[in-house]
Length: 177
Image (cartoon, rainbow, N blue to C red; front, side):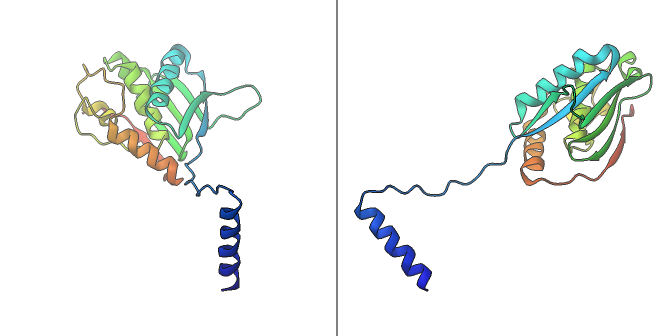
């Protein structure tokens, strides 16, 4: 009660002497920077960097940045002869593989890389079969070259990082079918 009266008196005095008080502005979630290491992605390094650029253009509260010397990466990217797959250890952390088998079968490398980053950003496979859904993965036709997350997928990533939701570690394997 005393505090309320004191605050009221202070506001009245401030108004009399011409002090302008600014209302509190809601704080926005700070941009979280995730460092990735693509040094083991072999011939796919440029594609990995391009996929990070795609995500950076679609979301604002998380940034994918190549790791710099002396910093530990949140994400490690590898290339191998298997199927693309992700091993997430939590939201924004883990490793993924750019599997050559999917590329040899005709899947678009940039779509694969953007899709795998999507798992690290907390998105599950959806298997809708739609080319417009990045997370439909290999259920979309092999001819699909859409490497952009849908508005709903981008909004989910925004929400994941705004709320600081901890993703359940997952092992994701891309399969044809």
